[in-house]
Image (cartoon, rainbow, N blue to C red; front, side, top):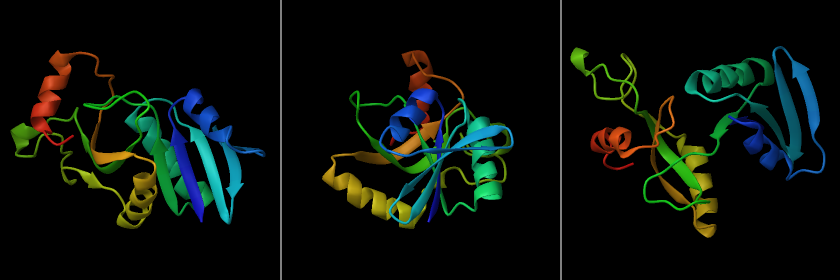
Length: 164
């Protein structure tokens, strides 16, 4: 299986790559891709930079150039009712910084797209089985192009998504 892993920052990428004894570096186009092997899998890792647009660019790049079977977006994030170091598995993801409700869409819904995006059931099932043994949390995630650092910004998000 070919797996693409998107990391927003070097600290995330470096932490993952430090788990492997051998890492190959591939310079293909504008990005540096790091390749590692794990059992029969080929894992490709790229630092995307922060933000949804950067992550989407790298996901498209993976599918175009590396015949990716699965793409994972990993990283450091905030949370509600979680502790530092908790690992959270996203079962579903929604935007918290999109508002076109004036056009009869749900809060967070991009026109002509679903209100949220469910994780791939096959990968989610496998991940949750592994997560259960490691005391990981799972649930709905929200994403936006800002770091939420105040209750003033957080409260409307929690109102729109009471189950995050």
